Image 1 (cartoon, one colour):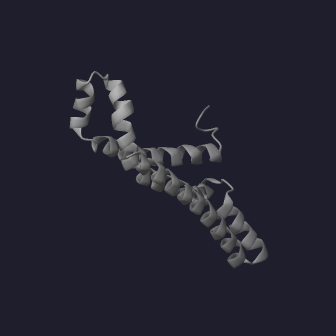
Image 2: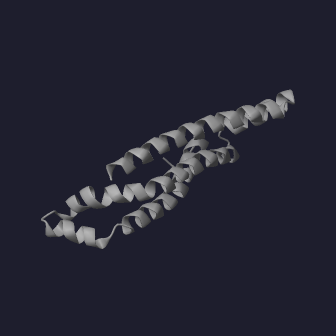
Image 3: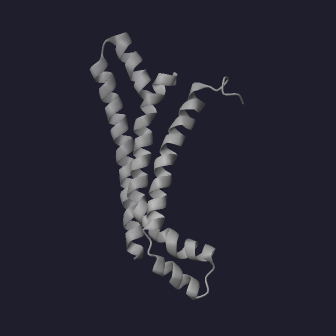
Length: 139
């Protein structure tokens, strides 16, 4: 597919994905770097391969460190999806804007959007808390 023929939704998904992936990759790099090198050396000394060491030692500890920052990145993606309106994607803020313009009831339209975003973010935060508690119980 040519970039000239790309629809607005695809462009928005690619743009948000590239933006978020830069932050997420730095988060994961920092989380992996936070694992003590002595643990990697110890796993190699007991006969684990480097792949086993990463899978069983490094990644579980790095996941605990990276989870809050990755969750914030997902929230940023949800917030950034409102910018897709500038590309012509009709999303929830665009619908609220057009509904408010047609009925002159902007307050009600944007209040409904606030409630929807609040429900989405609250549900995601609840799932994040469950995941963090589950990961903390391992240690």
